[in-house]
Amino acid sequence: MNRIDYYPSADTNPAVTETSVSFDPQLPLGSDAGTGRHMVASDQLVPPGVVLVKPGTIRLQFMAADAEKVEVEFFHQRYGLEKQENGLWSLELNTDRTGFNWITFYVDGAEILNPLAPIGFGASRPINYAEIPDPEGDFFAVKDVPHGTVTQVYYWSETCRLMKSALVYTPAGYMKNDTKTYPVLYLQHGHGENEQCWIHQGKANFIFDNLIAEGKAEPCIVVMNNGMTQAEEDGFRTFGRTNLQELLIHDCIPFIEANFRVKTDQQNRAMAGLSMGSMQTSMITLTHPELFAYAGVFSGFVSARMMGDNSYLAFLDDAEAFKESFRVFFRACGDQDTLVLPTFEADRAMFEEKGLGPEACPAHREKIYSGEHEWNVWRRCLRDFAQMIFK
Figure 1 (cartoon, one colour):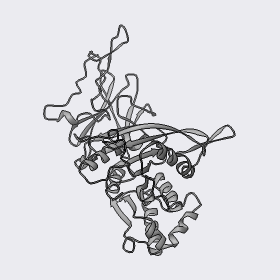
Figure 2 (cartoon, one colour):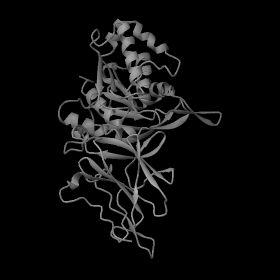
Figure 3 (cartoon, rainbow, N blue to C red):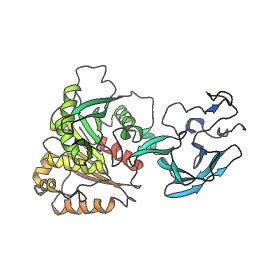
């Protein structure tokens, strides 16, 4: 088998060649035909599944020597890859897409995870994606600034009768100063995702690191729970979108306040979420306005129309109470988000009918971003929301 030359040409910036989530690009893998051992240097190198060839061009690759057909779906379109003599399937794709892009490989019609392409999580399963350099993506880049720490914690949920996991971001300096207390943001992902996604796909920690270093955001703690909450009932696991409210109020917040140096008053507590997480944010903050002064509804639902129970919306009938409770109620959506935009506009009309439109209520803020129902929108939502809270 011939050596595969996958490295970029001399006019390509090697710093942006790889789209892996790791800091050091994964070395290509090979195997010794005699021993089966993996080697770093070999005549049987397997290149990464996603390579930036040059700005606007990416190379997608999949090693499947025995396959009859390999395809890839990228931004709603499916493309065929060409098979080379060495068994590697390859496609160079010109695109104006940047940032986070979900990609799906198909081998002989079956969806297959490419182990040598970046791996994330979505739609309740591992996914491949391409992180294409974004000219406007400096705000989530890994910069030479003081960095915070992301810790995975485990706590018992009496609500679910299960152990639960959460990721907790603490800002730079948290470990050095053992007396300072911080405000806290509870940040939720979308349907089919988990507590890892706001870090590995959303870059939340780097967004906060950069904003804090620039003096644009207040140092705070960010808590990310799994909103696909399950409970154990009669020996079975059950899922409920609304279980998060009880878990957060009765289990998670007490745990965080007992184990981290956080401020515990309403003015120093915020909640935000994307898609399903936005619905959960709306339900929880409007049900418990005494607990949260800030709410972020990203690609979002205020009315939980698909859930049937909108009793929490009764709080909006008291415009003065809403204005007194919330310092920021931020709603945002992508301009091409066909999934959410109709609901987003219906929610706007509802707020205006109740005298709580952005013009009548300074706390109510809206923003439309360029994009669909995607991380490229949600990263920007968090960037902007982070600069509004705890001021």
